Image (cartoon, rainbow, N blue to C red; front, side, top):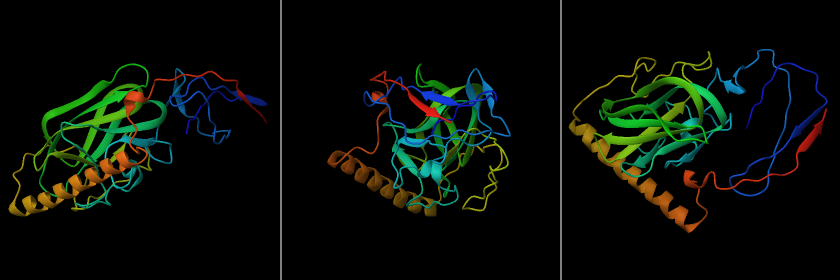
Length: 266
């Protein structure tokens, strides 16, 4: 879903011309709406600066890399609905990443995400963004920091189409787990305060904790690791046995096309 905004004007015809398709030489338009906004969006150099979370399924975002029972769980579920066997998106440390694609390039300066926090484990990671044309830009390097629960990333405003989080360390096992991601953060009133499943207020500066695992944590972590590995193995087997449900970014920009435009008469 793409949004285009401009100054208020009188319109009778609207023409849409496809100029590129990463998968084929055809341009496909599924639906179209035009409207008048009483509260105009903030636009800089033709790009929207969103005042709400745009990393949602409703806003057209999708998870294009990462393993989960529900492909878009990272951006579609309420962040307190997870347990040690389900509700997270993960990847093997040293192999892969978790990547979210926004519906269009937005001017973004903040990201917030929730790390799995049902025991005493801590994680390390890096965060990169990509505008779809140039190179990946690292906006956070916490590869040597022990991080837990909610993480808030701020950086100079820039054009973002993809968000990539790469796990570097997990104090409990060899899998990196994320529960929820949103951007930008903070946003408007609809970004409500969340209570975690372990009764901890999460609207705070992210805590950095280095804690040893208790015997109970070790048992839970072991079951959690087995569940994570089983999930990744199942997804891998399904991908090799049928159409791959986890698209790779390496093939995202190989094709271009030019076709005649589509004109809407109002």
